[in-house]
Image (cartoon, rainbow, N blue to C red; front, top):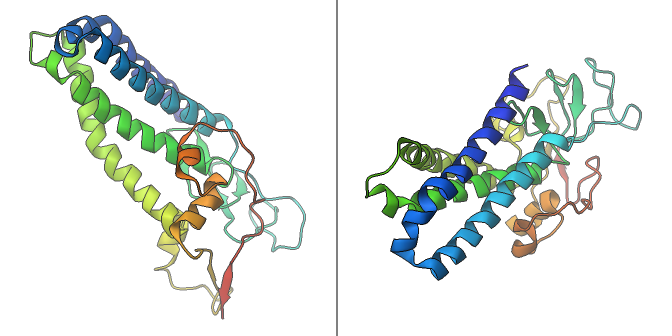
Length: 244
């Protein structure tokens, strides 16, 4: 029940920031930037806002990818699905998720193979957008302003600091070819079943690691909104190394 409420709350806050900008800040900022420059800055801000909404909604509605019911993989004792490499059982979804990163209540969904890119892009654009909004409306804050404008400014400035660190961490893991679960598993003592077997999914460089998530090594293509299908099925991974 909490997950849907968090989704609605996040969309409402994002909408409130946009509403406040056009009703409280835009007319004031014309005197600081001039109409032409302000329209250009606003257009850039709208692209960032669209990217935030697009990637957030896609992360919410796009399933992470679930392990098949049959195949040449071990069987999960909890959900009776197969358990390919990088798949983990999610107790909330009650299923094994392909390349599971974590279950995120803020998107009311698991983050896994099929929606990991949307999660990373959402973090990138929400961090960028909150910082951009804070800097853009700063001149209006220096003048007598409404409580709503001050509220959205403080909210975005605070979120920019927190989300920049959070986004940086997740992008770092992606560049290293790791999920959050895999990062912490590096420091776990292997169980009897897994003792002597270690998977290494990291590829030769960070661009190739990002290609597993975005389906491209071209940075402009990675950052643009896309629904392009991924080149990998979430069951088999290129350059996967198994140490014994």
